[in-house]
Image (cartoon, rainbow, N blue to C red; front, side):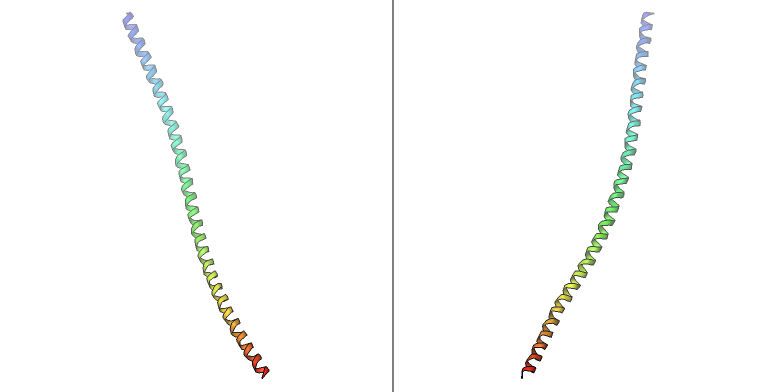
Length: 101
């Protein structure tokens, strides 16, 4: 009977260890599931941030292009203004020579 009792104790010990390992494994799985859910949420949040930053970048590029066009138009106007001022000065100079004669 001692042998049966020892065998039964060994089986019980083994079953208890198995149950403990299963409980530990279930705990780990639950923890990993929570961590996975958290990582998915964070990934989704980061994807939203990237999308927002891409929209902002696109808007900023459009604004930069608009400002570049305005700058180029203003530079052209300034150049034309300089030409007009030169022509007016030339006309005034010609008028001054007419008055002197």
